[in-house]
Image 1 (cartoon, helix red, strand yellow):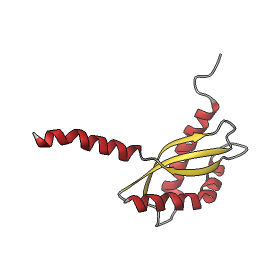
Image 2 (cartoon, helix red, strand yellow):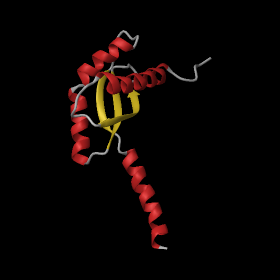
Image 3 (tube, rainbow, N blue to C red):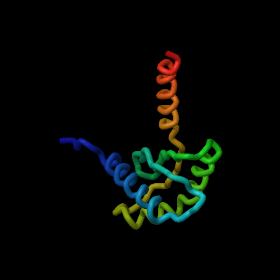
Length: 118
């Protein structure tokens, strides 16, 4: 009988929880803003983890800068993650900006415009 959630799903879910705790408690970098981890997608062989983040209360240049700093801090974050997770090998971390929140806010703004015109 197949499991409902495969190993990749379980690893990515646990990785998302641990990464959010690491960014919240362990990483003291004043350059980083308020970062939320939206999704973690782990490759089938668990070698690479794509981490999708959003950064609140910054402009586009700030969003790009935060993702750049996260990618520069990736080895430090990976080391902290290795201490927390019980895996033989920890995935390579790659951070990407997730613009779905911005898109959702833009759609909500466009949907509310007809109400303002009436």
